[in-house]
Length: 454
Image (cartoon, rainbow, N blue to C red; front, side):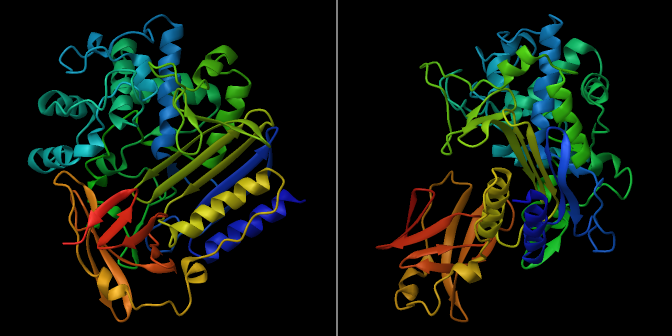
């Protein structure tokens, strides 16, 4: 099996189906098996994508924050069991430790849950908020913790903003400078922490991420739903590391060669977190979470440490196969036209990495029931009830030109209007996200939530 040929064929198919606009790299034992670039790096389709184009890594950035903390732990400047109130006395979350911030088990609420707070700062104070404003939000609004420290797992971007501020406090330098001098440079990376909406794009090789809205690709800054991208641009620790595929290959080799972190430090970071109950946390896919890394065991590849990232049109997928010495990097900068097909594309890539044939990458048009029975569709139409504190919910189902649509609202923004594609009986899918919707007796069911028809 020629992995290079199969990977490049799959990426071409993904490009042709509107699933991938970006760069990729797959390497084994430090040697590149396949790499490439497809699509465009600008908003007007004038500048072809380059292999060294620079992308926002979004939440893949978190592993670098965790690495910075580990370096300070090594120096004795920070303790993993330090309570965060040692560094932020006014925070209303006593008992939360640095270890729990790194592993998302402290229960500190995610500022993304109340992003309107940062949007208001941006609008009223005419500036882009930063990490200190995240602390300000937590102290002023005092959102309820998700759970008692160590009792559960809940992904929170606030955790990593606090960690970045701790790095600055104890090191005496900016977070950006600390990562540059202590992580990126020793690893041989050209990566950097950037705030492109605050400071501008350094050059045109920094890609412009686009979101798909009403059938058109647009900048999230002018979107009816994703305009909060501007208010989120000033934070550190949880995102905003910019890099190319070669930087992430260099990071993989630097970790293997112990240029930044020792093998013992990495083993600690790759150990899935245990909750107070003694149970090792795992998500629905069976993956655990370490220090800025998702951790899972694959029957073909052994130990896999990975992280993905998404931020308003920016996507990053970084997977390291520790036992087989491989690494897979995907960086792309446009919403896929069909999220179900995009998920099949990613599974196809993972199959090739395992030395197996990829499955078909089918769009919803190819998967949907042809000539479906529409006799019940009119009964699905109408308004649906939701809980008062819901921030993402179906509002109305309606017919238009013989097709079924759903109006889906979110806590802020204009909401979405999605065409429903019939998959069989009472089950439907949308292109924006790879979830399904079912209709029952006067109800709509999604994410195991039941919404009653009014």
